Length: 204
Image (cartoon, rainbow, N blue to C red; front, side, top):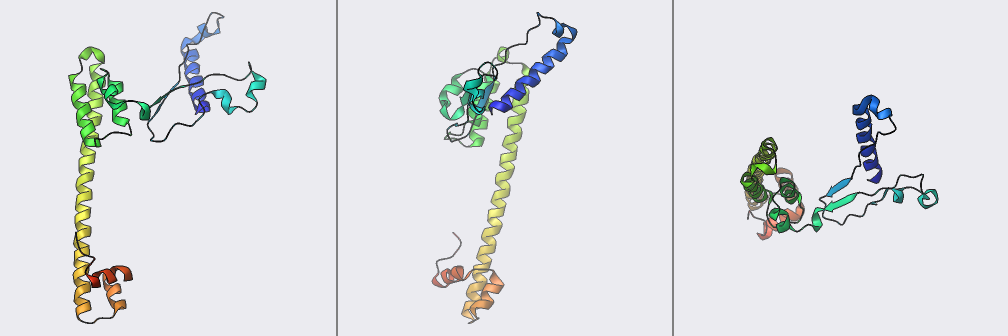
């Protein structure tokens, strides 16, 4: 991570030099400072090195020759959910949306954030930015709804197949068919067939 951030910083400075043109050759030309920030939304504690010198072998012996900087870490696992929602800015709201520890599911969170964004005064952000975030949230809500419906249909199909298989197995057992034949026709395992014999495997 420190090396990746350094590469990003160098690319930003290269763009600044390119944009400055000939003025970048002057002694008075200065590059702008960059404060690298990492947003972390994982559930486990962040363990990566935060200072670049921690990733350079023998850096202490080469002070002044090795770039030395650290990034600011914003770990969402350490942020209080209610504090995030109490801040009147879109970034805090989206941080809450990405936070791994919430009692609400994605749909509930999205609706809550959507209502919050709609309530923001226009001076807090450009209207286009708000519309873009709302469009994203609405798209994600529709996607999750569609995924839920598809999963429900799949579960229904699986339950129907299980019920049909159990009916076939019971009929074949009643006719005295051999176990190997029943397993072949139904696709059940010997353990499942044993449960069917005992009446323990049935549709919930």
